[in-house]
Amino acid sequence: SQGASCLCGSAPCLLSGCCPSTYNSTVSRLAFSFLLLLGSLVSVIMILPGMEAQLKKIPGFCVGGTSITIPGIENKVNCDVIVGYKSVYRMCFAMACFFFLFSIIMIRVRSSKDPRASIQNGFWFFKFLILVGITVGAFFIPDGTFNTVWFYFGIVGSFIFIIIQLILLVDFSHTWNQSWLENAEEGNSKCWFAALLSFTVLHYALAFSAVVLFYVYYTTGDDCTEHKIFISLNLIFCIIISIVAVLPKVQEAQPSSGLLQASLISLYTMYVTWSAMTNNPNRKCNPSLLSLVNNTPSPTPAPGQAVQWWDAQGIIGLVIFFFCTLYASIRSSNNTQVNRLMQTEEDQGLAADDHEAATGEDGVRRAVDNEEDAVTYSYSFFHFSLCLASLYIMMTLTNWYQPDADYQAMQSSMPAVWVKISSSWIGLALYLWTLVAPLILSNRDFN
Image 1: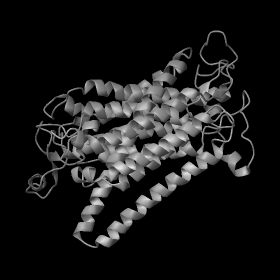
Image 2: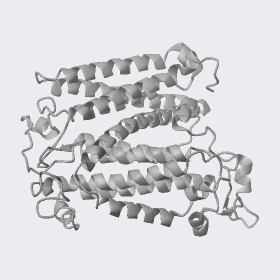
Image 3: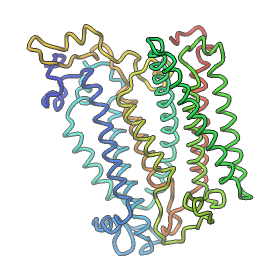
Image 4: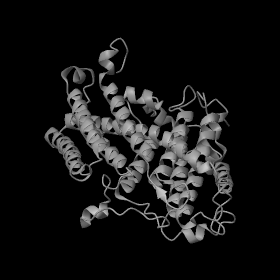
């Protein structure tokens, strides 16, 4: 019955949602993240070279040289170029709608006593059917203005998700630093401090090397002034946050803050800077990795030429995305500022006596409800984050490209550059706020 303990991991418990528990709260986040990663994998497959011929077999998707009617350009659409892009947009549209729907449904769920909590933690077969149904329907959406409108939705969503990724990296580095400092206090302190120092130096070395490479290869053209400004500003900002992180007053207010977090954030900032510059439509300011290796100019793709969706920054972006998605599903942090930004509670684990109660007289481990008083994370915000993640993966897989006016070729644009750079600035500002907030708002409890 509702609120009673049940076999931990049993199929009836998970499918019916009868046991909103610590076990279920973690499993629910992992299960929803698995659905996101599954959809992302399908999107990756759809955009692989050679899949165009298979996608064009979808009825009405791309027939006779055109997809569903686009006024003024009938029979002119280059399906070999557009079909992969269209497929990813529709797959990610379905995922975004799915998670946004659950974000709306789960608004103001306060505890497991709310009937909607059972929907969050169970009925997985039906959730999967809903996602499949939305996906099938998405492939029948006419073109027209859909691609353009959804491109701007993708830009806005990705802008926010890049900031969320940085917040998650702040939280990860905080937990990492705190864990190793505790290990150093328990014994063999030299070894643990040496490890912390090694990773900190490695992060800064990679970030500084990236800055040098950026100046060498991405600022050589006459029209690359923006790149010089981006690189210089982000270098200055990274130096500032590194200095602030070790100020005596900041250390006094937050003993666990330090250069490990600042170095990791600096490295991520340089990645976002690189990712932004690779979207510059000016090929003189945006050399491809292959052209750098071969020391040849970057060719401009001709209309009708197959699109190279995969590049180094896109692959690294996918790796960071998968890591942040997994971490968001299992995170348990005591960083107050980050928890407030991510809408999660500080203490998400069971107490010792709860662990004892989780094992019955028959020796079988049973799940125990720890959300009767309050949920351990915001269900609605979690789904909203996955909705944004769906938009981010859509933009990453398509390299933030747009079709040209005749739907004959894909092209990058400056709005994508500015969105990425501005998100890095806002992310750095949020990290700086997590450092100085206890000093500015001294009358509030940040411990």
